[in-house]
Amino acid sequence: MNIYRRRRADPADWFSPDEVRNAKDYQRPLTAVRIVQSVFGLGLLLAIIQTSAASTVADWTGAEAWYVRLLVIVAFLLIVDSVVDVPFDLWREFGHERKWGFSTQTPAGFVGDIVKGLVVGYVLFGALVLAFWALIRATGLWWIYAWGVFFAFTVVLVFLAPLVILPLFNKFTPLANEGLVTRLQALARQAGLSISGVQVMDASKRTRKDNAFFIGLGRTRRVVLYDNILAQPDDSIVTVVAHELGHWRRRHITRTLAVGTVLSFVLFYAVHVVTSWGAALRWAGVGSLKDPAALPIVILVLFAGQLVLRYLQAWFSRAHERQADLEALQLTRDADSFTTMMRGLSTRNLSDLAPSPLTYLRLDHPPAAERLEMAKVWAAAQ
Image (tube, rainbow, N blue to C red; front, side):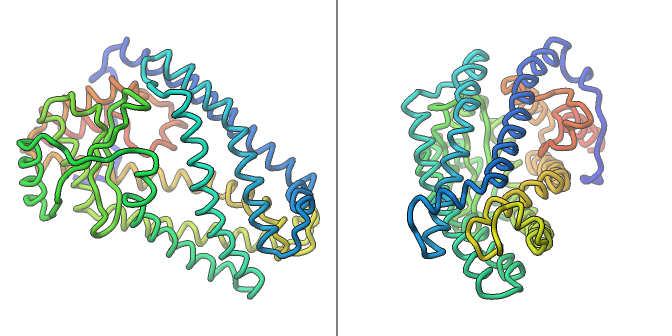
């Protein structure tokens, strides 16, 4: 079965008109607000560049050393971005998500997430940008070396995320259901993998949605279940974990890193080309890329490039999800549980069951109907 080929399916074959309409009613406002938020954020970034606001803020501090000015600008941009996002996030968490019965977020938790996000973002983004600007000030080939630094940084981040970053936001505990743990460990051995256990994340403190994911590299790799999903039958949970094991078995994190590395090279080259153009630097109010106040225009180029490349990334992601679905079916030999799990997960979370052609292009998972159709074809072939 060619897992990279899209298997078209009619949502009406798998979901009722009410289920499709309900999902649309939930997703439509989210899509509209996401577009407005992106446009507003882009407009604000353009305004910052046009008015040389980054340079002005750095001047206010009286800082002269380039690295101090750079860190001031990083803080300024992160704070502005966070302030802009707050109204949209408030509507999303305490308006839309609560209206549909999903959000369990508290005001204190909401504020805490923002503060922790700012601190973590400042430490990580600040360190990365300092390394970039040191290279920019040292060599004309900075963009090649910066690309290498970015790759190394990404690998380290993926490795450390389960140990250092995620625990700042959520509590993780081993799955307590011993019978289920035994089944999952046997499944992992069948897949040729070894897992010490499955982690459960206290997602219920923010949402009632079900989910699971895999993360980490080497000894830090983890299968993580939302605590909400534990209310589902064990067979469904086994299918979910089999899907995540399929990602491991097919080395999808490594492949995703490889794809990201290639695409990031394109982005860094684009930054090099644009910032070598005198008119672009004059528009940003700087005489040289060595000036830390050029950071906003670098972010603008990366933002524009990512808008284009995200569709290619989404294509790879959908292909990986198909492959992981197929692995789950082959490991469990249980198409019925897969079908029950997929239908339930999609309808409970109100996933878009009938995405438009444009929406489809940016999806990182195939629509549920396509995944269910693939399971049906797989079962018929056995």
